[in-house]
Amino acid sequence: MSENKPSEFKPVRGMRDFLPKDAQLMRHVEQKARELAELYAYEEVITPVVESYELLAAKAGEEMRLRMYAFNDMGGRKVALRAEFTPSIARLVATKLRNMPKPLKLFSVGSLYRYDEPQFGRFREFWQANYEIMGTSKPEADAEIITITNNLLQTLGLKNHYLKIGHMGVLRGVLSKENVKEDQQNQVMQLLDKKRWNEALATAQKLNVSQKGIETLKVLIETRGKEPSKILPKIKQTVKNYEDAMGAAENLQEIIELTQNDGAKADVLIEAGFARGLEYYTGIIFEAYVPELEREGLALGGGGRYDKLIELFGGEPTPAVGVAQGVDRIVLAIKKQTVSPRKGKQKRVMIIPIKKEMRSKAFVLASVLREQKIIAEVDLMERRVSKALSDAARRGIPFTVLVGPEEAKEGKAILRDMEKGEQKVVEIERLAEEIMKAT
Image (cartoon, rainbow, N blue to C red; front, side):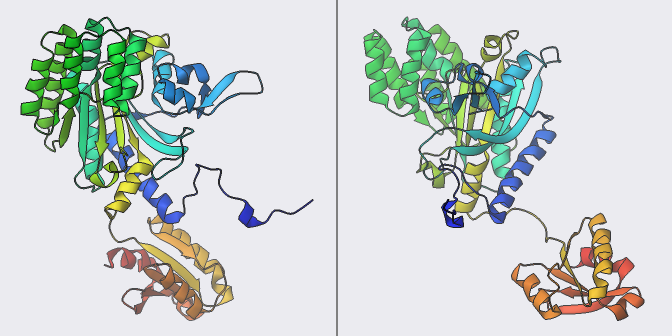
């Protein structure tokens, strides 16, 4: 039997290893997302990575269904790795949380899986942070979901980000008036989602949409801009003969006005012909972009209103709206814009025992410093002091503490500032204080 060489073992195609710096950035984004969830009073829930295929496939859209990691388990049940969070959250609300007071504001974060073709910014395992509001159809909820998305990108220091916003009710309102059934409408939406506008119009013609309806759809597709005061009236004028579409346009205007009144108002691009591939959206939809990734067609996150999904899973009729923030996409944007995470100078220390008999003292000292929230590690290699100091410098550790027998007898240690190249003898009981006040 031949032995495998280490070089032969690689991650499965579309999966990735995250080395320390990248892992740190991922956790930084997750941490900021979680902090915002707490500020906005969202409660975190954790759902399984594996769910029933029927749950995940319902209203997912044909393309999503084709890209699920689906298989039969050992009991013969068809299951799948989650490709998004919303069906799992909707299941929770339809079952275990059905009697909880509304609105429910839920946060979740974790990995998801889709069998996409691996390329820049698109992998088969990826991470999202989700915010969902269940139990209210009011525009304030839609505005909050948009605002929290904008706030997250601002908090992370991203520049020139904007939100592309549309409303599925405008498009579906036109098609419904033209007697196009929902499953046929989905064909048009899938094409609009891929920006295949001419094909979408051709499909609408095949579905017997009138010439007036085709012209209306064409104008909607061409209606886009960053000035709500000009774009919103144009949308309303375009659909004035379609009652449901007109109601959706008014809802869109109300939501946009609420987001623009926010103190940190979002930069928005309104696109009347914008659609998303998931079939469950019923109202406003949006995606977040930065210019550096927009060229690659990569949204940092997206979401919208879905008022019928929970009912589909056996729950009470429950209006809902949510957003999925792409954690690893946001990390890509941070790297592209060379944004440095906003944090103070890290209080990190390497403790170096000068003699072998000082090892126990070094471990005790490390524990004391950790209790003071100082990152402390003990040199574990039994190197000469010069070698240990060189290693600390190479790894960017700002402080070292040398524990020697003479100093220890006097209850002291040597504190060295690695950046300044300065050191001093400090009483051990004042060591944490001296490190914390060092600049």
